[in-house]
Length: 358
Image 1 (cartoon, rainbow, N blue to C red):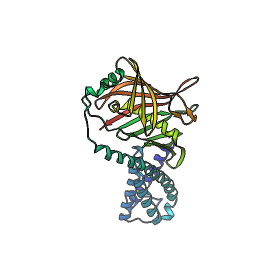
Image 2: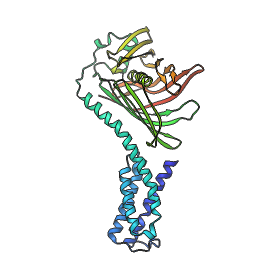
Image 3: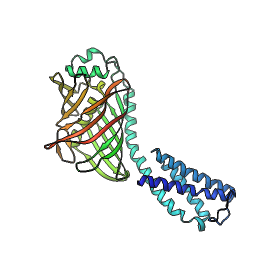
Image 4: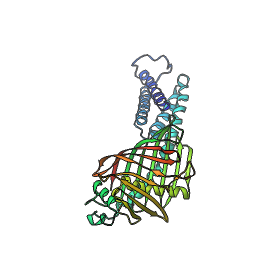
């Protein structure tokens, strides 16, 4: 609602600038502007209006708009000074738009840290050699894992070095409403890295968050309007939690990356197996559950900390609706659940929109 109001406000404010253009070119009588406006000045009024309209288009498309918006506000204010007596109240409108511009700049600046980390990972992994996954590579794995990798379609394809994933879904805490979100993440598999940038809406206000897992260290920062921190986490518990999350990503989204010497496999039965993943001295354990088709349908780990609860809880991620993404069969819908004494609670829903591998 607030976003819609702001879009309409910027659009109306921008269109009002057409009055200066109309008066300068004498296209219609404009009683509100008593001072004469030259044609060159009138052209600037038109340009200002167009800058505001372009800003609105960028906002609607959820693109970075702050630079265009700043140019529109600056030019608008200069023109207002030339007809101050008639247009001085436009200054207040420009002040409102300027607040939006500053928030847009903060969002851009916050996301730049994530993008810089992504560039480093891409430059590193793109330079790595690429090997092909052969049937012999699967032989040491437990039978259900072999069946899963065959079903996923990894044979005779490259061992992947990284992936980019786009997800839409919802997040919530116990007793609170769902918060819709869209996220982009990059995972790099040579040096276990997970970079997760989230854009969400909470009570009509934009919320951005960055989870970074690098070199065994994890940090999380969530900001309201990309200005006000509302959640922050780091430390040993966070490191362990994100180690589980990283391994969960490997299992559910990147089966071609499961041929990793950091994973120790322990067979259980024909439809489940236990895995121990160790990174930077942090070992985590998980059980993977499969169906007869070879699909991975659930993942459980007791080593993930529920940061809100300040304790470890059983962590489940059921997966379903398998689809083909760039040649690999993986689940397109999943949930993240905590298991409380009274039962499981789904705190996240995830709809897979895009996956690319390299």
